[in-house]
Amino acid sequence: MEEQKQGTVRLLSGITAREALAILDERSQPFRRLMAFYRAAIMEVETKFNVLNAELSLQYERNPIETIKTRLKSINSIMDKLQRKNLPLTIEAVEQNIFDVAGIRVICSFPEDIYLLAEALLRQDDIVLLERKDYIQNPKESGYRSLHLLVETPIFLMHEKRPMKVEVQLRTIAMDFWASLEHKLRYKKQMPADAEAIGEELRICAQISAELDNRMQAVRKRIEAEME
Ligand code: 0O2
Image (tube, rainbow, N blue to C red):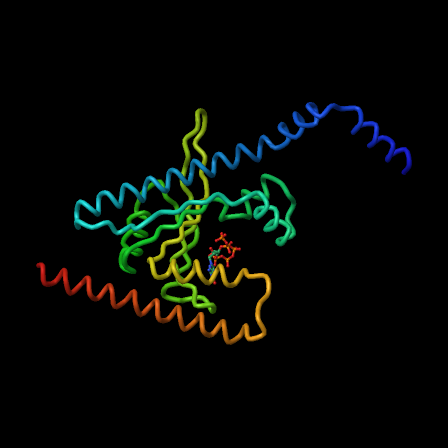
């Protein structure tokens, strides 16, 4: 045991800081490479939505997409998730079990735009739908609404074509407004004693935002009908 300890001490003191950095750099290379692939996959899917938005804006003279937000899951969040799932901290475990490393959030004007865009994306022959969770038709217990699509899309590298998973969340501005504020409130360190009542209040706010979405969509339809 003592010898083992001494062995470690000799190793640590036997390398320079530069050598230690070089080892770290070499060890993290496969992970950084994987993250670069996920970044490329985000770019691919984001471009697809931008193209659809441009086409639909020509067709209907309005942009169904308000904004697109993208995010690559941080290394800390990836490690936390692997540990929560009792999985090894390996590249393979990330690829096979963490499906939201590449995330893209599409904020639409109206609920109908969400389904229009989702169907248009899923019709593309290089997109494979792996999972669909419709939290608009079936909101979560918290009141959360959004359409989640887990898709696989290829990225084209110098010598290979690699399928990559991307999680797409489609929401309206009202859904995003609710989710952003609820997320901020929920992650406050100290939940107050009346957490149950607050949860209920947030569910009511979610219902109001759903009502707002439906009414705004109805107004749009009335205007369109009159213009026709
Ligand atoms: P972040 O930082 O937004 O990525 P899993 O993804 O497997 O851990 P689950 O429940 O199967 O868990 O995934 P699901 O239902 O697809 O939801 C995951 C993401 O949806 C969350 O990501 C949030 O972005 C969003 N979401 C789901 N439920 C709620 C909710 O009640 N409130 C809010 N504000 N957002 C929600 P992460 O990983 O939590 O975080």
